[in-house]
Image 1 (cartoon, one colour):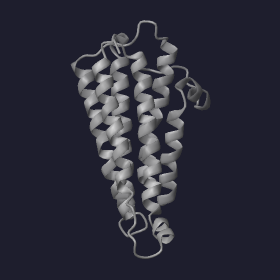
Image 2: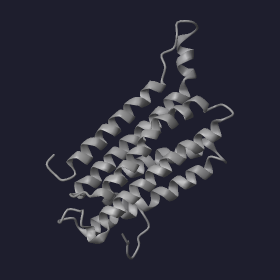
Image 3: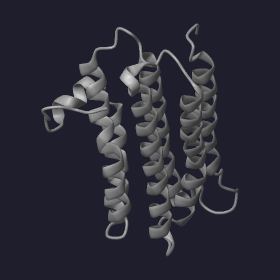
Image 4: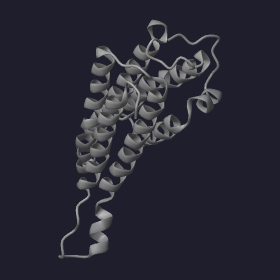
Length: 208
């Protein structure tokens, strides 16, 4: 990497790599006593939490990579916003372990709320990072970035905080539905912005 943001990208890639690797540590190897198959099946909350969080962190990494193909310069504010985003990423392994430990037990609802709230925080920091980079006439963006493309990115990201707030609220009504929203959102944000924009309600203008 030879761009001004090379160190930002390298540091962020390291955080994503560590966070996604830590997820597997929650899945324990059963002991020798009892039926192995039954014990493996009993760990279904850990498997579910791992799959959702792996998909989510993977999609975060994809989106971070996409953003920094357009962001060619950095300044102190951008560095701070990126650190805030990495802070929220580092919390995901903890909330994943919390969800795996309490899913199917009395504390499940609280665990899901905390889990969803973490993703809400990530969505907010992603929005702040992108909006700052695209603000002030896009001085941090690549010179050849089409404003329509930037607008599509903004439009797609606008749905993140609202959708995760719905997931948090829905956790009090239906835990499976709340977790399903997380999976759906992971797939939605994996879609390139120019494709996602075709599936979203059209707007006459998208402000940065």
